[in-house]
Image (cartoon, rainbow, N blue to C red; front, side):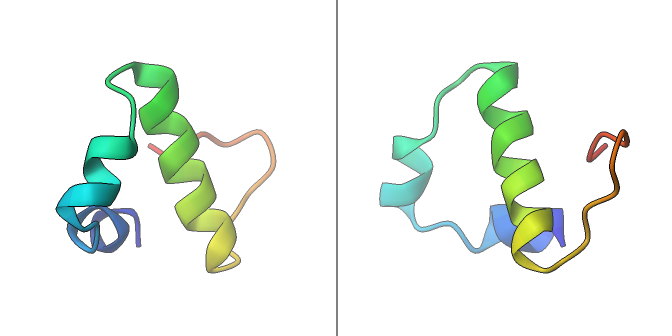
Length: 45
């Protein structure tokens, strides 16, 4: 699901994301939350 979220980004949305590791982790966590695949205390990757 995370890869699908990454590959579904438009160029404009991709530009809005930051370049830092915190930005990536936040994006991936949000992508999992949107499809109901969150596990407490388990990082996305």
